[in-house]
Structure formats: C-alpha cells, structure tokens
Length: 92
Image 1 (cartoon, rainbow, N blue to C red):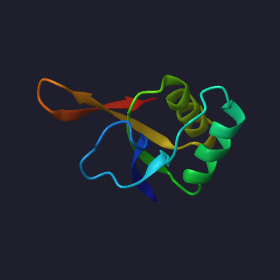
Image 2 (cartoon, rainbow, N blue to C red):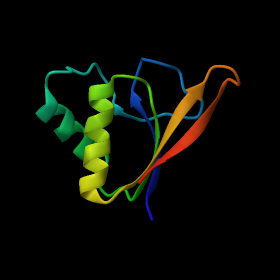
Image 3 (cartoon, helix red, strand yellow):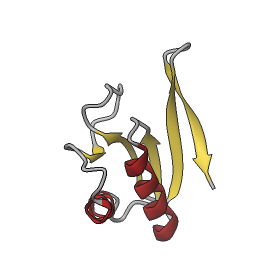
C-alpha cells in the first residue's frame, strides 16, 4: 500500500519532516482545472495520504475531492499553535 506524507502548498509554512508538496509552486485560486490536474499527477498511485494543511482552502478542497474520487484514504494534519505540533483529522 503506497502511503505518502505531503504538505499542501510549498512555501506557506515550514513543516518538519515534509519534503514533498502537492502544489510545489504558487497556486492560482481561480484555476480549478489546473489545480485538479496537479493534484492528480502528484497523487498517482497513492492509496493513503497524510496531508499537512497549509491554508488555501480552494486547493485543500480540490485535493479532498480528488482523494474521494480516487479512493485514497486521507488524513489531514492541522497545526496546534499551543503545543507546536500537528494533530490528525481523518476524512471519511
């Protein structure tokens, strides 16, 4: 089972231990088709995704939709400012 640990958008936040991003460069929030194509390419063959959320809601929704259609088991990881760590949110 291919599992990936990725960040959503490079450059928005430093995420320890995350080296790859679904969107490695700036995202045009109005280009939904381009976002979908980028997400599909980044997640080809993935079965399980641990996604570290970095903001940009429109990009996040695009990835959630792709995972739903592709049958990818998705867990979102959100930053907790008080503890300085991330906590999981499974997407059903």
